[in-house]
Amino acid sequence: DKPASTGQQKSRGLVHRDRDWHRSVHIWLIDSRKEKIGLQKRSPTKDTFPNRWDISAAGHVEAGVTDSRETALRELAEELGISDLTNPQEELVFCFTCPAEQAGIGGCNCYEYVYFLERDSEKCQIKMGTAEVTAFKWIHIESLEKALRSGNE
Image (cartoon, rainbow, N blue to C red; front, side):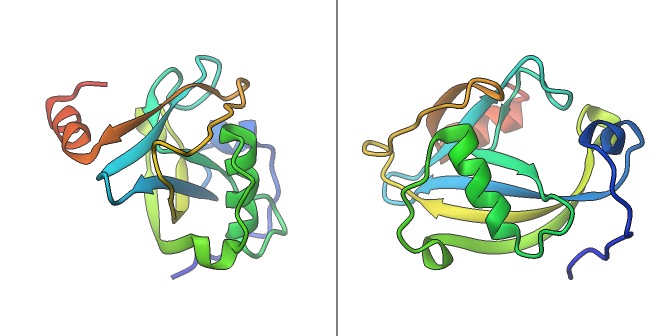
């Protein structure tokens, strides 16, 4: 189900401060042949989960935007320099929407529209937007699972 609009508009900072529920996109870069996932390291100046490893790209869906794919494309370009999709409707695959209540642990409360984007990890050109991202790496899914189970960043 899609989240219902409240009809309110607030700045990102106020939404986070007030722990309001809002919409966001999460984009996972995946290399299914090599079983790898792309991760970004968030800037130390971010207000949520600063200096932590995170999904490939993410961002708030702005008020008035009806197709979250528009936001996903913007965030891919801003954070990772990926703007070469020839057919975004097919390449950027919408998977699901899920609620994420994380305001109490350093994050925010959002409904995440989750997308997958298949890329070859050896050929994918990453040009990080340094305002939000300080590093990027491809990690094998087994290594990621092991790190998550052990609590290792």
